[in-house]
Amino acid sequence: MNSLPARLRPKVPAAFAPEPPASLAERLVALDRTVFEAVAARRWPGADRVLPKLSRSANHGLLWGAVAAGLAVTGSPRARRAAVRGLASLGLASATINTLGKRTVRRQRPGLESVPLIRQLKRQPITSSFPSGHAASAAAFATGVAMESRGLGAAVAPLAAAVAVSRIHTGAHYPGDVLAGAALGAGAAFAVRGLVPTRDQLPSPGRPLVDVPALPRGHGLVMVVNQGAGTPDKARVLRELLPEAEVVECRGDGLVAELEKAAGHALALGICGGDGSVNAAAGVALHHGLPLAVLPGGTLNHFAYDLGIEDPKELCRAVEAGDAVAVDVGRFRSGERTGYFLNTFSLGVYPELVRERERWSGRVGGRLADVVAAARVRRRDNPLEAVVEGERRPLWLLFAGNCTYRRMGLTGGRRVDLADGLIDVRAVHGGRGPGFRLIAAALAGPLTRSPFHAAVRVQRLRIGGISPGTPLAFDGEVTDAGASLQLDKLHEGLRVYRPLTL
Figure 1: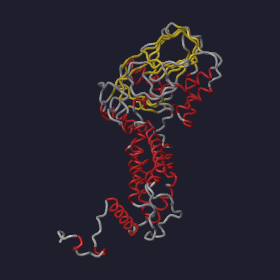
Figure 2: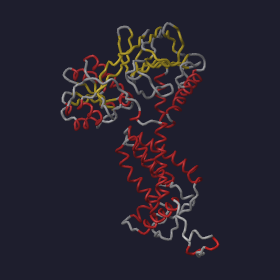
Figure 3: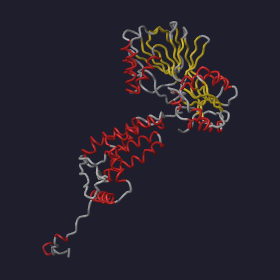
């Protein structure tokens, strides 16, 4: 029949003409509506009362702000990082959805005829249905948390999934809106990780691997716990995790004596305390040639955190397996006196600068805290006069870090290599206007050359012509500097327990 001329072919009524096949987009929309109707018709015990309330609690990210606050107050550094990363991922996801997502695709909200009244939200949203902002925020927060801690991520994930499902259950979104929002939220978390790497993406802070005794159940380990450093529960936890270890509790005044006593019969020396306590234990461990086990337990725990030790389980895993790395130790000598620093050494206004920065960093952030701290210590009358490498210089501060610090600013930050053989030296030159100079240096960061601020990496440093009574600070401890100082490194001089994988 098809061979007949068109004028001779029989005409088919329009009602019986075959419809063109549906496009993929049309089939997906139809499937989306079918699933939505199926969810509306399904009765879930207890869900009609719980899910609408859960959906409302996630408005404007309030639910996730509360979860983040709960993580932060635990005191765990990993939980705090997870909270910050989760909120940062949520913020990026929310901004992307509201500025691009909903303006790009205009889709009407689902009809509520099939949704039981008890499920419906009191205030129905009027913006575009695609994509779901609630699902994006939930997925972004949960993914960000999981990037820092799988355990915390697993705990948050069911709540995030429930929020996403609640948007379908209440009739606020089609399933496709929720899936798209969740994908965008997870993508936002990965974008944040691309800008700010997670801990497991950073280079290992310890190298090279060294041989130390493996101590099953802690046998041969003597762990000295400084009770004055705010560690009331650490001793109990250590005894539970390492039942054959000897755990000694003491106060700050008797710390060195207990460390020396422990070193006389230990296979490995342990310390639980802040940076000052760790410094004292490192000196004893170096003198006796013992490996050191470090557990953070003070206000500041820079060395332990840079090493990668944050909680007792991580340390105990390394001690039992015999996993350890070699790290550098900074050394300063003045006449017959020798001291060590695992973190920082400083002269001038640096001790006061660090104290002010720590006070403000939690309120305004690390970089801005440098500027605030510099402004608050600007009233120092006279700069430090010293001869640095044979040249007399007026200095407002001189900072020397054990290994290279990555964060921009005056007061150091995180290190990713604790055995690079270098001393990270930063100085603010003297002159008029100390406040202006300190603030300018804080804003500039560690530039290798600037009118006010200098930063160099060296293996040794000589400082002379120091005025009597000049304070010297190292790892949180303060003493008087001598007339001259020599700084150098014990490259890979200390063996420290650290799990090979964190």
